[in-house]
Image (tube, rainbow, N blue to C red; front, side, top):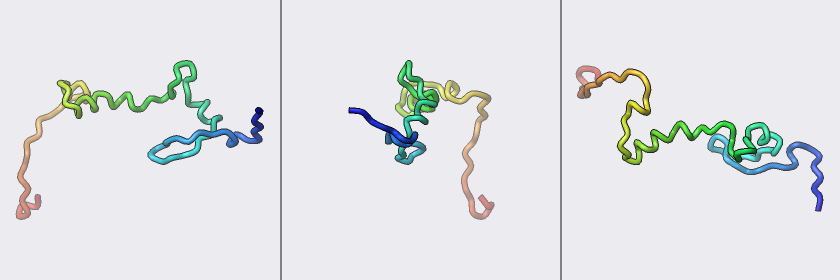
Length: 84
């Protein structure tokens, strides 16, 4: 059969958008999708790969994940008398 759509909201998909289940019109998805590779244009989760490896106890250096200079921090004891 045929489908007739009077507006852009006539065809939509259900998905997660910023932790909320939302209806997304297909016309909006066309703007943010790489149809050739069948992926979204913004792949935000790729930046999390190194952190996930660290959490999974892979042998990875923290300097590979965090760029820049790291400085040594010593642990101080908390004291109410000294105002923390």
